[in-house]
Image (spheres, rainbow, N blue to C red):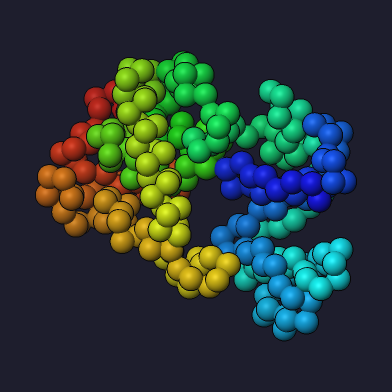
Length: 244
């Protein structure tokens, strides 16, 4: 293994010698944790976890990398590395855009593509070909911070508003990472078995009927793509030309 990298919800280990894998033409072990997956480094003599799925031995012979997953929505597989915009990516990840926490994230380019689309802003935020890693919860929280309704047409957004929105996206993601993520049940834990506590900081997601922390209005829940969207009806008024 020569490097460990990530994009959005994908992790991968580049397979190469100590000098490093080539920019393309090499291979990577691609990992998606799904809803409950974990990668654990354990001593070789440690007891097997209840939901151990894959075991890989390190060259030192004393430790193992284990993939543990209760719900089995995650997985591991080998993939070829290909070059995309000067970056080596596994083929299954090649179509996924950078996330806002990556150094290569280009806000100006994303703004151009976003304004050219005919869709609602939340659909755009969840489109991994435009931006990755946001997810339903953090999209709702960022839209609340930017005072944007989830159905606001992307073509109506000004560049300053887009910058404000992605500033909110970045802030929400960084705060969530600092808090260990958002845990709603015992399966959403870190490698030490600890739950994330960002759910205590959620302003609107999952807060239907509760007061908006900013204005006190009752948070509203709307159906959205077989899921839900949560907004403040005062801070985030529904646009007349909404993309539903």
